[in-house]
Image 1 (cartoon, rainbow, N blue to C red):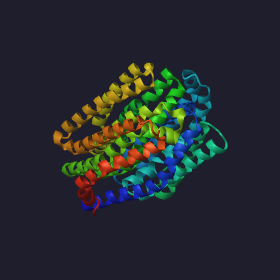
Image 2 (image 1 turned 135 degrees about the horizontal axis):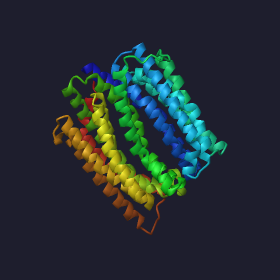
Image 3 (image 1 turned 90 degrees about the vertical axis):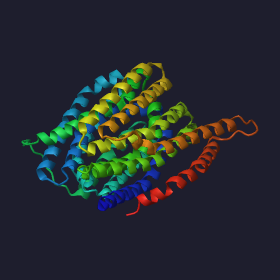
Image 4 (image 1 turned 180 degrees about the vertical axis):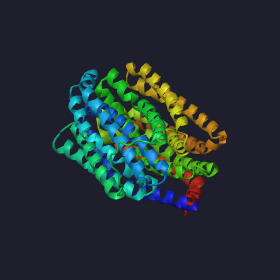
Length: 479
């Protein structure tokens, strides 16, 4: 068990180090590109991305996890999974190509046709990533995996900056950035993993693998649908410009979550899968992961919520002003979303994919219903509808999780203190901001207000968390 802890912590360490080095550049480039492009540019890309993320999820997600679940390299499994992935990918991509004109008419934007065709041309490359990426994850080779992802991210960011700044290409900067990242990941994973696989049409004996993958894919489909339903629905109700603002707000609020969960998903699923036969040990690891995540996530995202308007004006520009309140709202919920993702990794790692699928269905019902009700009434109403319905769905998910794995409510008590202290900090910083803004003697610039809030927030919460959790965090990272 200590060897597993060493692997997990080593994987986290290498992933965090490589991500940190590249994400500083990536975040700067993201804000830089957002300043250059328009809300409508982001709306076009957001709609196109929905369709291809759906294809990628169906053609890679469940199949990749099925390979990891085998816990060994097997040429037959590799050939079978690669073949299924490629066939599904090509079929679904072809459907999007044939539907491109209809999609463009639905959103009243003909530019979508060429964007969809361009992304379709590169999309099947994702099937060539499934086997090598799964092997690296299964073997807990997180160092190599993190390096490939980071290099691909940097190349994509450089592409977006160069095209947006020097050539003024609009949304094409985002499209070609995606193309470059996909190709870089495909080459990198295959070179590093040295996986052997080939196309086969012999699917005999694949029922168990396919069933495992299908449960994950169906759960993933429902999860994808409710997490991207806002883009699809708002794109129709409010137009691409408002959809662009909404998606940028979601992206900015979620940047730290997306980067952390890319690491956590790889490490957590592989770790839980390795000890799924020891339920007690798995629950102990989950509790430690929950505690660590809560201590980091609540202060970070509640801090982001408190400076959301300053972030918009300083980093994005005045044309994105409507995104500020939405960022503030989403950031409050993101720690709970991260916790839910961690719980889903535990559920999948323990082999309970059907249970995860049912959870996704329940959440989808709440979120899609709320968006259909709130979407036609404007951007902020839609965001509030989404956030409130998601809060209800999360409460149900947590309750179902505790019942399924026979845990007491006190199991989640590790979340309480970080939440309460961070919420107090958020209220305090908003109060300080209001008081400072009301002073007429000197009007603070947005960057000055942001620095003041960051310093006050760190001074308020930092000593408390270090005092309470410092020893435990140090112990966690000891080999």
